[in-house]
Each structure stands twice: as C-alpha cells, then as structure tokens.
Amino acid sequence: MRTARVRLKKHGLKLEPIYIRGGLMGIQAALSGDLPLQLQGASTVVAAWAQGAKEFSIIGAVATSGLCSGGSSFIKRPEDLKGKRIGVSQIGSSTDFIARVAVRRIGLNPDKDVQIVGIGGQGDRWTALTTGQVQASVFQSPFTLKARKAGYPTFIDFSKEDFEYTVAGPVTMRSFIRSDRETVMNFMRGLADGMDYYRDEKNKDRVIKFLGEYYRSNNAEELEETRRTYSQVTPGLPLITVKALENVIANDKNLSGMKLNASELLDLSFLEQLAQEEKRRAVARCL
Image 1 (tube, helix red, strand yellow):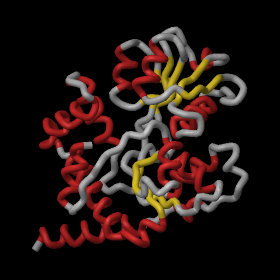
Image 2 (cartoon, helix red, strand yellow):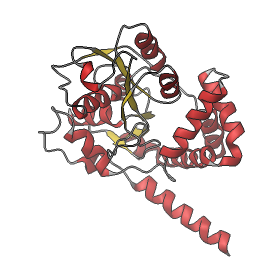
Image 3 (spheres, one colour):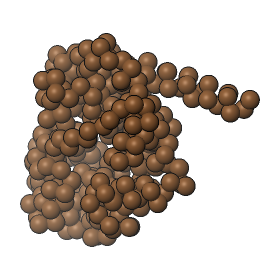
C-alpha cells in the first residue's frame, strides 16, 4: 500500500487507504457516496450491478489470479470436504464466489455438500482453520506459504487454472467519472506506476520493506512469497477483460440466467489512454 501511496502522490493524489472487511461493505460504502473509488473483487461488483446498481464501473484489474483453496491436514482428498465447513470473508463476497467455483471443480455441490460460512479476513480465516472451526478456506499470499508449511493441501490453485478472474481491481461510479475524470485517470496512472515498481527486481528490497509495514510482519520468507506471487499475477498495465466478468456471470447460479452483457460494466477508456501514453513514452525513449 505504501508503494501505491508514493506512486499516486507523483500524480497529485493523496491516498488515504481504508481497510474494509469484505466486498459487500465496500459496495455499501460506494452506494452511500462515502467511497467513490476502491479496489474490489469482480464478483461482488457484478452482483450489485446486476441487481440494479448501474452506477458501478470496473476500470481495470491489479491481480487476475493467485487465490488458492486449501484445507486442514486431515482432509487428504477433495471429496473428504463433503459435509465440512469452508470459511470465507462474507457470504456474497469474492472469497465466497471463489470457494463455490472451487467446490464445483472438485466435484461437489456448494449448496448441498459443504457449509460455507462467513469468518472475516485472511487472518481470521487462518485462525478458524488452524483451530478446527472450519476445515477449508480461500487464501492469498502469504497465507498460502503458511498453509504449505503446515502441511495443508491445496485443492485448487487458480493461478494455475484456465480461469480468468479479477481478484482485485479499481472500481468507481459513473457519476464520479463524469465529475472527476482526471482524478480517476491520475489514480490509474499511479496504479500502473506502482505495479511497474512492484515487479521491478531492483526494487525488491524496498517492496519487501513496504509489505512488512503493511502486513506488520518481519517474516522475510512470507514477505518474499507475497512479492513473488503478485509479481507473477499482475499484468503490465492494470488490464481487465470481458472474459473475466463473463466467468463471474457463468459461474453464479443467480446471474447466469439473467442475460447480462458484461461489457456494459466496463469502462476501458482509462486503460486505452494509459496504453497510448506508454506508447508515446516508448517512442520518445527511442528518439
């Protein structure tokens, strides 16, 4: 987060990061006018948009995979999850969506064969898993490393699956674009700069330092796992595809029959402008 704040300051924006537990609370904050620009998982935004919140607009993505579903050590095979509890942040959240996709992919019915329960953030879900309150959950780095070291199996690693999905991406309101378009554009410029900075190996030590401050951790192995994972799953620009949203719709029993046009939720004009600006910089470097 500190990397993002530094890069955004370069573009005239002062970022005040606000942690919100679960995507549904972010949706509510946006609809109330308190949070016009945020990073969100795709499924929560698509669901709100489909239910009438047409002011939402997804304008990019910063991570398109990297989520893993895993379980406790006594769950040896995916089918052993039948009748067990799976922890997610909130019912209706992105982790809920991913958990349901994962359950279907291992041959179980998420509505009948398992119990999906809202637990909270990754730390809360990890505690619930290790104390036996749930038998599986959905994790990102660095908790994926914790799970491997604890001997917990990974049932589905979406970074290795042929499944486009936006784990996190910039979401705003159409009214905010109309009133403050340059602010949104500067946010996207800062976001793209931050992603480039994060992936550049020469910045490795500073990125790990920033991650340590964000996670309040000095575990070098876990911080390097996080840096490496997100370096692999973040694209050159904060790109998003229609396919990523179509996957959300197709894998949700409520959305799949609504004949939704995913492209109507996207505003790709900011990405197009970023690409043009990058092209001009590349030409200038060659002169």
